[in-house]
Length: 262
Image (cartoon, rainbow, N blue to C red; front, top):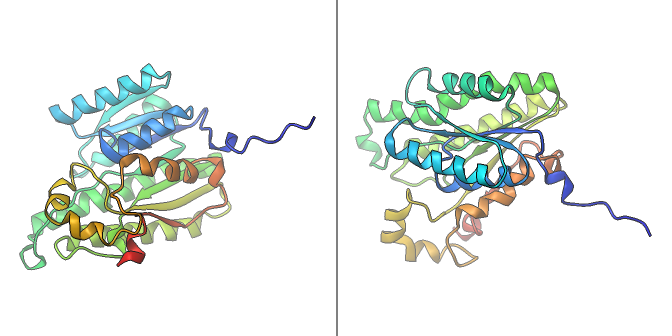
C-alpha cells in the first residue's frame, strides 16, 4: 500500500531559529508558542522593565516545559541602538536567525492636530526604524544561507486607518510597502517576505476601544466575533515555514472579513 505524503510535514520548523519581537504576551506570545511547538528555537523579545521581563520569563519557561529551546532578550526599540543590539545578542546566543517576525509596535491615540514631534518620533522609531535595523542585520545572512522567512505583523489599519491613529496607521502602511519591496528584491534567494494584517483582536491594547465601540465594530465583522491571538498562529506558520515557500510579497488579512465589512 502506498504511503501518502504528509501535508503537515512542511509546517515543521526543526532546526530553525525564530526571533519574535514583542513576544511577551498576546499575538507575539501565541506565534512564539506556535513556532516552538513545531520545533523551532525561539528568541523572545521584550522591553527591559519588571513587568515585561516577568512575562517573557513565563513565556520562556512554558516553551521549555514543552521541550523547546527558548531564551528572552530585552531591548528598547525607542533607543537608537535597541534593535541592532537585539540582533547582535540573539546571534551571539543562537548563531543564526532563520525566521524574523516583526511584531513589536506602539500606537499612541490622539487627534492628528495634537501630534507632537516627540510622540511622532517615538512611534516611528519603534514601528519603522527598528524594523529597518533588524532587516539590515538579519536578512543578508538569510540570503547567504539560501533560506529565510520575514514576517511583518501589520494591521487592518494599513487599509482602514483609524482617525485617532494617524502615525500608527501610516507606519503599518509603510511597513507593508517595505515587505512588498523586499519581497521583490529577494525573490529567488530562498528568502520570502510577507505581511500578516490582524483586524480587531481581543488584546489588552484594544480592551478600551472594544469596551467603548465594540458593539458597533462587531456589526462590521462578517464572522461575528473579535479575533483571538491564536487566530494568527496558523497563518504565521504557513508564511514562515516551507509550507509557504511559494508565498512572497503577500499581505494576509486575518480580520474576520472586516475589510470587506467596511
